[in-house]
Amino acid sequence: MGMADLKYAYVLQQELQPTVQQVKSGQLPIPNTAFIPSADWLRIFAWDHLTDPTVMRENRIELPKDVVVEWGLGTGDLLAINGNGKIISVNGLTDPRKVLDRPKIEGVGALRADYAKRALRIDKFGIHSIRAATLLSPIGYGQRLGIVSPPDTGKTWLIRDVLRGLLNVSRSNPKMKILILHVGERAEDGTGFYSILREVEHDREQVELYTTPDGDREAAHYWVARFVLERAKQLTRSGFDVVVLMDSASRILMSHSRSDEIIKPANAGMISGGISTASVSATKRLLATAGHFECGTLTIISTMLGAESGKPSHEAALAEEVGPSVMTAWWELIKIQKSGWPKLNVANTRTRQIEDFASPAFLQEMQQVNRLMWRNTAESEEEEEEDSGGSEEDVTQSEEDAGKRQRRRSRKRPARAEDALKALLVWSATHPVPAE
Image (cartoon, rainbow, N blue to C red; front, side):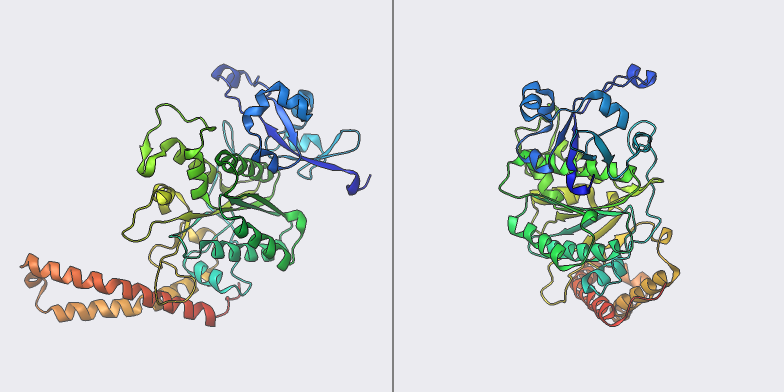
């Protein structure tokens, strides 16, 4: 039987909370399980429909429980089914035993996530914005990268450039899977992702695009996002290097909070803008699935809205709650009137545990760029101390003089950061990527 004779469907499974006794005995309940033709199904339906026998019967989507047990199926698995209704493969795996024996990456007995151990070299393909960003904050397989910016600063353009880099990397990594999730944004922006997929050569089997634009109901944004992250976990368990591009996590947060179809705990609190703390926790859980595992890697790269300077925004709540302390990499864009692209906040753009995956040559270049960026700043600070006159004891004598010096430094700091950014952009445009 040829590939053209096969039908494909995704698995959607009811969520159950087993009791402590069931976990201890190993006799876990078998949840209601459905197969759906595409994730678009979730733009109309929801997980709750799995508990409705009428919906299951009318849509002819129920999977027999013995099949679920035989293959160990879960939400997000992709089934290849022959004309007789028999499962031929799950995520490309044809042996039911291998599918059933996949390690867990969450819950009881799961593998533990680690920091990235391999570099994800999206900077090697002549994309200037990515070259500049990764000189400050390189990324590896298993990273949680937040791209945060105020409105109209270019976060969507930057994540599209990331996609270009990933498509190039995928040509040399057949185990890579790229899941693009476009949620709650303008439909035209989703078309931009389609354009890149047509423009850059790649294997279509390695890329999946999921969209639920602004016109969809609020609950659909969250249901589709949750499904895509569940799919990413199943692929990671199956041995793939999975990268989820999410635009944007802030919209998922807002949709979850606004939707009346999504039940929140009665005791959930509120943060700025009337956003439910339960919605913040739900969105954090989606982002927290990333990591480097023994079986595979799951990388999440997500845009988030940030507040403009001096203008607090409830839409920036996620960036404020998550921040660099939760994400393992952070690219921050800011509004600068006179600068090149991308407008990176050089002080706040960073990556954790870089030494675990970056090569010595790359680390050396990062040090060179860092010294170049802040050389003028250091010289300016030395000149400022000389201009202030007197010894350190004299400086601390007057609180009024100290206040004047602090205000003078604050006025100069933005210009210094802009000079550092200019130095970074010049270097990234004029220096090729060093050989490994």
